[in-house]
Amino acid sequence: LEFRRVLFRSIQRVGLFVCLLVVALLANATYIQVIHANELRSDSRNSRVLIDEYARQRGAITAGGDVIASSDPTDGRLRFLRTYPADTAMAFAPVTGYFSFQYRSSGLELAEDAILNGNDDRLFGQRFMDMFAGRDPRGGNVLTTIRPEVQKAAYEALRNGRCDGGCRGAVVAIEPSTGKILALASSPSYDPNKLASHSQQVRENAWTSWSNPPNKADPMLNRPLDQLYPPGSTFKVITTAAALRDGVDPNIRLTAARSITLPGSTATLTNYGNQTCPGAVGGTVTLAQAFQYSCNTAFVDLVVNKLKQPETTLAETAKRFGLDEATQAIPLPVRAKSTLGDVSDRAALGQSAIGQYNVRMSALQNAIIAATVANGGVRMQPYLVDKLQGPDLRTLSTTSPATVNEPITAAQAATLTSLMIDSERQSGGPATIASKTGTAEHSAGPGSGEVPYAWYIAFGPSTNAQIAVAVVVENGQLGTGTTGAAVAAPIGRDVIEAALRGGGGR
Image (cartoon, rainbow, N blue to C red; front, side, top):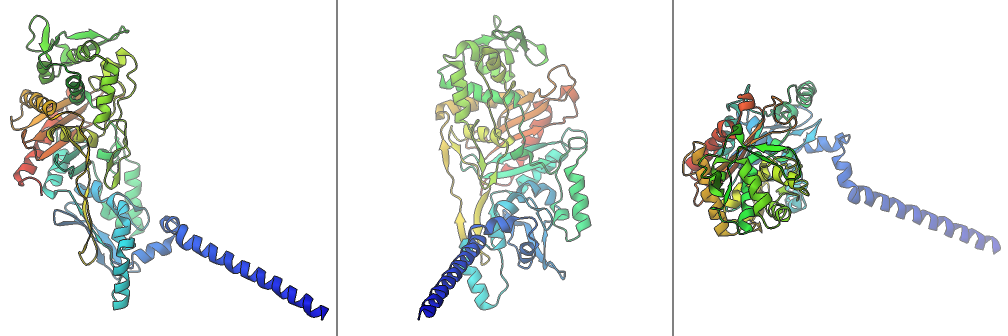
């Protein structure tokens, strides 16, 4: 009897131990298949997942009805090949990104991967029905806000701009009333078809060439979203907005001197070409004239001497327009965080007022500023994806326009628009466009022989604007004589013309 009791207790212990092992096994399986699943799935070493993804037809990415990324059947081990139309692949690369067996993905291919590969939870019913019906699984579709004619015009204008061997730079175009991104162009660009190739040699040759570019080309850099630049005189839009918010009248008199000494410093700041501001009377000009002719000394005088609390007012206005906060171009991440920088002393404040010193801005951020003025002072959230669809073309979600804030009043926006119309006329453009140019010194500073960055921000028509653009060019062919008016403005005007010729927004 005692032997039986001992045996029973031993069996109990063994049974309990086995139960614990089963629970541990289930917990581990749950962790791997549920909690840890996404991490394992995205691991670049997990070739089984990749092969599984290539066994199904990946969804399409479209722009205005044009397919800019699709999957074609093949006879190889990988059943589908991701393709991008040969004639537009490079123009749309900053939007689509690439989908590669070896280098994974970027752009919308990465941001909307779950929809495109069919694993999104919203497609569970579709996957179940496909399995029940014996159909091969398929991915959903991504419909972008991009207008193809505007995107192509932006890329071609960059390629053919006044630069040696094509421009290095970016163009962003936004619909002011909604925040839709109409164009997101970067130059130089790359052909995502080579990274999507099923030939390892083709993929590796392309990757090696593009990831080690000579002469600062860096074709895989998404310049509109990931690169920061000093904005130069385009920042005077924010400086003027700060003055208007502070109650300054556009007819206030400011210095027209060719140079000005920065407060608390022996350093001086000059107007472009070391010239006296045009239209001066008694050594002064109005704020309206200073804006029209982009007179640096007048803007230093404005911020340092005319604002009640200059550091606070300028910093607060810049933040209201989106600087020093994270910007998201739904659903792409924006790695370049625009910033005003330190303006704790008056010398730094004077330089920052004209978009120099530590002020840095992305092309997307500058386009947002132009769009906000065009939209009567209302800042909209920029977005790139208009709609997500299932494989059966059923709508899964639609992006609705969203207001972020109102940095300035409608009256202040109207005043800025008037000033920008005069600025456009001064730079040789049509009265139907409102704009501001910029010519920004950067790393090496003045007198270094370095080519300045050329900027142009604008919207058109100047009333009821349908498009706002920002253009930045790194390598204008005029050397130290490169200006925003000469190099960036023609590109921006081409983009605006393409948009208006196409009949406006959708």
